[in-house]
Amino acid sequence: MNVKTLRTDKHWSQEQLAHFSGLSIRTIQRIENNEKVALESLKSIAAVFEISLTELKQEKNMTTDTLNTVNEEIGAKALTEEQHANAKEHVAEVKGFYQSLIFYACTWLFFPFAALVDESTNNEMWWYSLYMACFYLFLIAIHANSVFKPFGEKWQKKQEQKFHDEQ
Image (cartoon, rainbow, N blue to C red; front, side):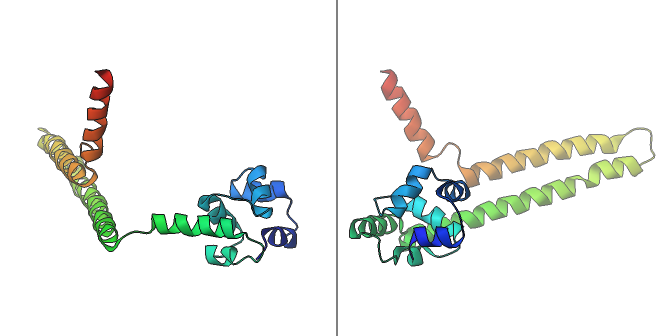
């Protein structure tokens, strides 16, 4: 499919296509002239026209150079099975974290509610509510640290580089 044909079939100007795709007008011109463009630009165009990247790549007028570039970028970004399994595991961990967060928030709400219902004058339930809030925040912090690893390998490498640069 020819991008220019797709654009003109919808009666769009290059400016409109640029606006819809989030690309610059110059990038739209490069695509229509079959010049070398980034994979992300092609993905944006395919999304705007609601077609797959494969359909867009099958454009008759697209140069071999551009096709080779797209295929190289797709190949470079393909995940190995191990990386895919790691990514899937991480997503499951993040999902579990958010489920725990919702559980903690919902169960903690019991304590302030109980304090409101409690008609005693000593307000012990308010203190329980405060204690449980601190305890739950502690649990959330531990869980977040294990899932998101804010002080993991990337942080360590960054700190080592920063230290090296200061020397």
